[in-house]
Amino acid sequence: MITEIGIVAGEIWHFLDRKGKVSLKRLVRGIDKDERLVLMSLGWLAREGHVVVERKGTYYRVRLRRRK
Image (cartoon, rainbow, N blue to C red; front, side):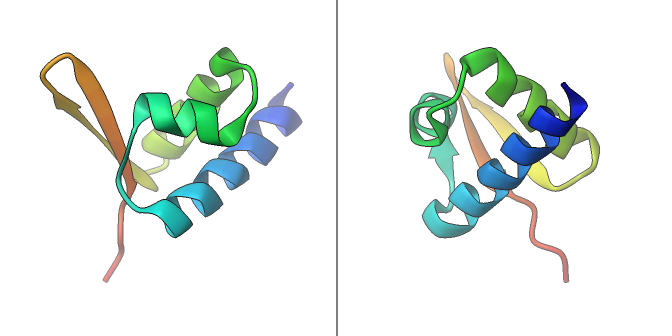
């Protein structure tokens, strides 16, 4: 399972690199994997400091954290 999470984390990173800031809903649709797997992978990326998850009212937006 950890391998799948890592692979999907890579897909998320590439998706956000192409699309920029997106809603969580758009991210899940864009990755086209099971929502739970996408959320696990997103959590991994967030914990590692690679993405920023922002709450906007009742929904969330996600973007890559750009390092200087």
